[in-house]
Amino acid sequence: QRRQSSQTSSGVGMLDLTSPVSNLDQLHAQACGLDPILRQKVQGWALASKGMFPQHSEQDTGHNQDQKFVRWEEVADSVTERARIKWGQVKSPDRAIEKLLRSYRQDVSRLVDMCRQQIVFSSLDDLLQCMHAIGADGEAVVVRVKNKMKLDYNSAESAGYRDV
Image 1 (cartoon, rainbow, N blue to C red):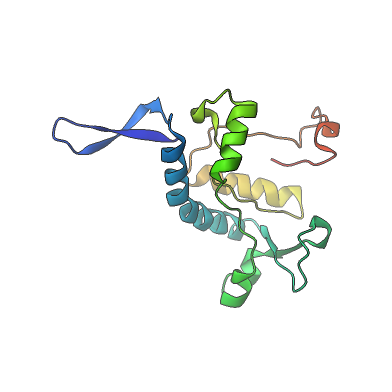
Image 2: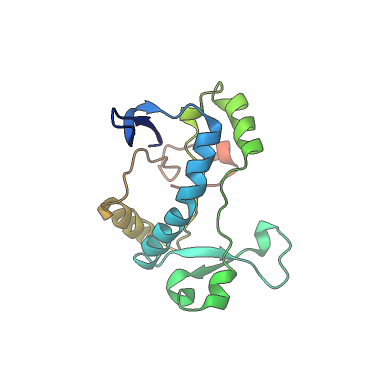
């Protein structure tokens, strides 16, 4: 959860766990600070679960059909190969504003995907292994899981795309 800091009587900032963030500038700054930490976390979770990341190809056209995925365990030790990973980026302020206006009635506290990454799996067992790794990570708190793999999920709503 993203929270604001408040001042104590001594003037030292304390984390306020009761007030949601209400300022997009503050949320964006926090996301920029969290992004490298999240990237490091997903690398560890991918290592524990045979997870893969999208990789830029030599002739990357930007189209998903050209997408290549590589197992983190195979590229983690190569600076050159790691540099070719397509990491998720912090949501731009323009896109955040668009989403706030279109979906969240300008409630900044509902914008929960400012920084994001993806891990891709070749099997459901690997996905489950990753979910266990995330659950066992003492520095991560799972607040919500959106499971589009459920049998009762209507995949027509997402053009057949499914994820967790």
